[in-house]
Length: 174
Ligand code: PNS
Image 1 (cartoon, protein in one colour):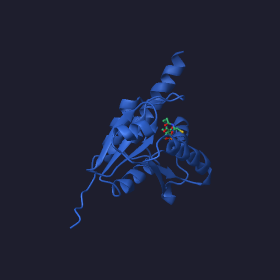
Image 2 (tube, protein in one colour):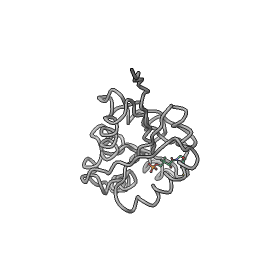
Image 3 (cartoon, protein in one colour):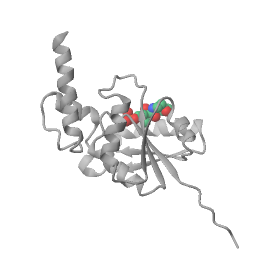
């Protein structure tokens, strides 16, 4: 008789999440159903200085994914494939919004595969409701006092508003 052993299927969902949007939240909810464990991986080290620290971004994601048992949130520094390997994950999940994302995502997926052949990237197409959404565009809307509750989980809205106010205050003191 063939013995069926089950190895845990773990995926990482890496990104900047500065801050997490409804689009990210939707991808997390859908991807979590496909794996035993989904690790949302917040990149620490970025050329562009983030509005929220890595710890803040981790906490914000934990806040809005607490209802999903198999989701874990961590920060990482370095290459996504190295982080995936250290977590025992064989899959990297990314969301694809539109054809404009495609070239960059393909390049990244292929580079990652060249570096670690046993780790695959899978793409989930973003829900149409969020096809236009990015953290950068939401920060821009927020910086002009626009309505951001259309784009962010409700818990995140006041946090972004406050951070933008703090930034403006700091700028005005210079
Ligand atoms: O949310 P983002 O900014 O689109 O996420 C991009 C991210 C974090 C997935 C990507 O920049 C990344 O994986 N950075 C870590 C360094 C790395 O592994 N680069 C890819 C090699 S091509």
